[in-house]
Length: 220
Image 1: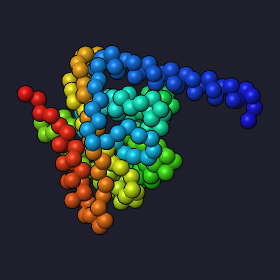
Image 2 (image 1 turned 45 degrees about the vertical axis):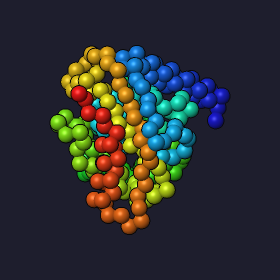
Image 3 (image 1 turned 45 degrees about the horizontal axis):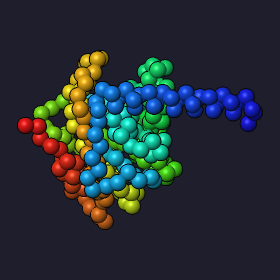
Image 4 (image 1 turned 180 degrees about the horizontal axis):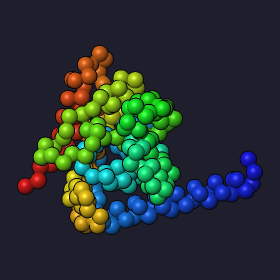
């Protein structure tokens, strides 16, 4: 590896870190976020944070509230067809957040999404994922979970699955809006969930959904 290549690589790494810090600062200014660790602790190592999904900024808020040393080892699972639509999005999605980019088009996939996530966990990183699969714009607290979380749990049953409830972010950045509305947001990290031996998919997903929904504080 040449000295010039090393210098360029170090410079680019520094740029991505500054960009990530700037995003985190902006999120903190707009949302004044509060983290509540209710049953789990922010520790290093492979784990899965699974959260409710109401805004495109959901994973950014979860990522921001992690200690800096954990942020560098926590990667969101995100849609490839969204984050690679422009050079700027690609820079943030691929290089700043180091997202595990999943192609939502089965006919166009060159990699298995579950295999991508397992490889990330095996490399020692944590994941942020949204088992509802899409933004919830309904009146229900949660949409039915897709099967990805179950397949992860089956293949790595020793991994802690941490439910994370995000409150208020959908009102900070409503769908279709560009300018955020400053509001206080809360992110509650719950107690870890693990799959039981031979637990059926429907039972596990219902239990994981209930663990996440239990963190929800209904608005008055």
